[in-house]
Structure formats: structure tokens, C-alpha cells
Length: 254
Length: 245
Image (cartoon, rainbow over all chains, first blue to last red; front, side, top):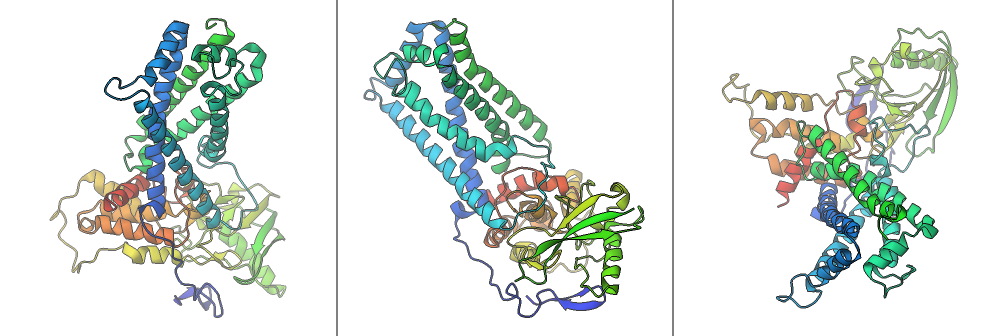
């Protein structure tokens, strides 16, 4: 690579002699679909979609708490008997849990490897850092937001699934864990929950349309529609998930 | 106009580089940004200093040679404008202007504000062409092309490969450049036979050069002097995913 170009009055080699970049061989990176940047993004899009579908069902299930303890506990029990009597107890639920865990791990793997690649692509940072020219705020909160959501997820499982940190404990019914989990005395837990739900909303605001873009299913004509879809779903999710703690706080769920 | 410039100075690729402050006086608001730097350089030469090196060629906004990050924005804040077409009237008197080179590992600094963009050339070499003897130009309309496709292909073909997309991308990704080149060929009949192999080869070269991945931030099209749209990247992803089946 020693082309010669005209630069002002002087004719200079693009790569001056003794320049390390001149003899630099094209860096090699392991090939294959999963090591390509669009491949990683496709993995992120598909695993994200799996988790969004779960969130929709999760939200719908949560709203059953407004129908009372009996309905809600019966719903929770029915998740475990899903597929019976054809399948043994808790088979389908366990399979779904494994799929979800795999989706989460792959989603994080894609995000972490892309973030590391991005870091290596810009070893020297700009002296002046300006706010987004594209006017996006959700986009720039994906990595921090995603990390925050992951930390919340750990707490959330310990609180409402396993009951480890829940006042009703692991032996309480799902409805008891929910009501006591959001009890006014534990306002800080509820605050944490509200912030996490908002982080999920922000994450989906970008993630939902971005998944279509990454899978090559977006086009000039569909951006408006995709953005409207992303905003609508994000807002519905936030409202749906916040309705339950709001219901407990207001005493509708008790 | 009087200005204070903070410019990245770097003797050669091995030099660590530093920001150096210069005062430039009596700048006409009608000067282009590069003409303003010419004024500084003439003075530096007279004073026996090394002039600030920067790339430029046509100074008409069509060649893609110029480009610098001005106050943190690639090509400056004026939308759809190359650095050479940015005029000093857009700056305030006594403004402090910070000027940095494109920052990306695959764009090593050659000197001051000049970066080596041969990584772009290697992406083109990987597949940004049509391997048929083209001969003379075919008769117009001998192969019909939809108006919409022709327009979109032309939009993509306006890419001048300046590298602003890479400079602006928080991931240091070359996706907009690569996607523009892929789109311009994949929308036209001549580009069809190699459509998938081209996307695969060019994306693999883009990754091999050490550019980051696209996370759909849209920062690239916001600074692109030619306004290359983001849907080119969706098309690149589609062609790449099809090729990887």
C-alpha cells in the first residue's frame, strides 16, 4: 500500500517511509457468522424478541393480580401444570425457563463482545465530547440500561420468585409475596422496581425498532411505523408493569 | 473575525500527539474552514513553524478528501456539509474551535489532521465492484430499472467515502460507508449476480479492519455530508444474513 498522491505542492507517499502502518498487514479476525458484527446483532435481535414476548406474557399475568388472590394464585399454579397430563409436572415451564436463560446469556454475550469491539475501534477518545447529533437518548442508554436491568433481574428473582429477600418468604403464596413485596414500608424496593421498569421501557424504545433494522427488515418507508410501534409497546409495558405496584400502594390489591 | 484554535498536532504515526492552541486574526466570514486554516498555515510557514497538515482536494464538497472533527462534530455542525464547504460565517467572533482528526483504530493518524483511510480501499477491493467486462455503456432503458430503485441507488452512490460516519459513530463502525457501497450496487441489475457474495466479502473485510459493529445509533447519517440514509444498513444486514444462510 504505497500509493502516491498529490498533496498541495508536494508529492508525498500516503504512508511515509518507516511508517508502521505502511507494512501493516490487514488484521485478521476469526471469521464465521457469530464473529461478524451483523451476525452478533442478529443474535441480539432474535434473543431480544424472545425476551420481549416473555415480557408481554409476564405483564398480562401480573395484571391478573387485580382479579384477586384466588385468580392470581391459580394462574401461577397453572404455569406449573402447563402441558399436563401429556407432559410431567413443570416440564413446559422448565423448558421455557431454559430458553429464556439461553436468550439472556446470548443477548449479553453479543452486547459485551460488540462493546469490546467498539472500545478497540476507538483507542484515542475525542477531546471534545458532544451530545448526540442524531438526537437519540434511548440509544445511548442501551449498555448502561441493560446492565441496570440485569442487576434488577437478580434482585427481582430473589424477591418475587424465590422469596429469599421477600417478607412473605419462599413459602408464601405468589399473591402474598406480591402484596408484601410492594408494601409501603418497603418503598425503596418499589422505587427500585419503578426505575427498573422505566429502564426496560427505554431499552425497548430503541431495541424494538433496532431489532428489525438488524435483521434487515426495516426500510425507508417503515421507519415511522417501526418507531411508533416501539414507542407504543414501550409505553404499554411501562404502564402495565407499574399498574401492579400502584395497585398495591393504592390498596386495590391487598 | 478573530478565533482561537485548538488543533491536534502529531508529527508522525509514532508521535503521541497533543492539542496546540493558536490565535488567528482577521478571518473573513466568507472564508471556508480550510481557507481559514490556510491563513494559519501561511503564518506558521513565515514564522518558520511546521504548517498544520490536513487532507483536501477539490474543495467543492464532492471528492471526500477533507474532513476533521470540529468542536466534537465530524465536518462541523452545519448539516450535510463537508469541511471545505463549511464557512466561517457560521462561527461567532472570538470563538474557540477545537479541531481533531477522525478517531478510529483503522484510521491511523499519518500527521496532524491527516488519517490513513486505506482500510476503506480494502473494503472496496473485497467486493465493491462488478466483475463483468462492462464494455461501452448500454442503451438507456435496455434494462428497465424501477424509478424508486434508481433513486435509492443514486442516493447511496453519492457517498464520497470521507469517513465522517466512522468518526461520528460511538462504536467506530464503518457500516454506513460499507452499506452505501453495497446498496448502490445491490439495487441495480448489474449488481445482482454478486449481490450476496459481495455483501459477505465486504462485511468480513470491514470487521477484519477492526471497525466496530453497528448499534443503530444513527449518529453516522446525522453527520454524513451526503445524507446517506440508515436504511442502507438494513439492506446490508439483509444481504449479509441471506449470504450466511
